[in-house]
Image (cartoon, rainbow, N blue to C red; front, side, top):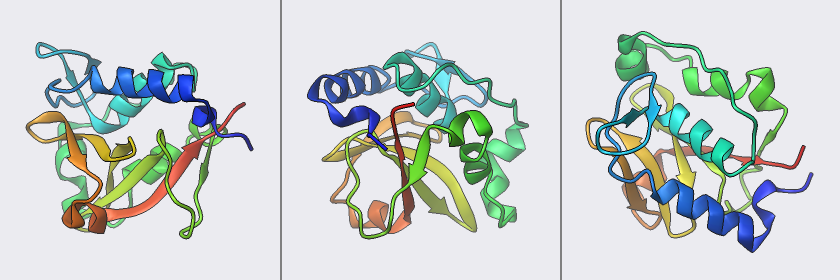
Length: 159
């Protein structure tokens, strides 16, 4: 399978699009860019990868606020991993082997509390993700605490 973000042009477009979301606040079930908008972690991923042409628009289920904010505190099942298994998502991604290094554009699955309940976008020297309540932020990939939460990576490939 050929990675979608293999070319320099596609990686540059991804980084430009992802960084244009910085400062967008967190809001459940939303993907509206900018300080007056809001976005959740899975909708951030879907919006960025749709805008860059990596995947077609995806209809995501609307989740109760409690599920978005607190699911990981009380459930061992991962809503994020379930989302990654949706047929329209699963058909375009593959999970990386543990020994395989992440590349720009890869999805980082992060674990908090009891389960993998968060997604970040690997951008080389930083991970962009949606934090509560800050919204879309960038963290260094050298941050040991952040790296300790990464459970696995998924890569988007050509159709």
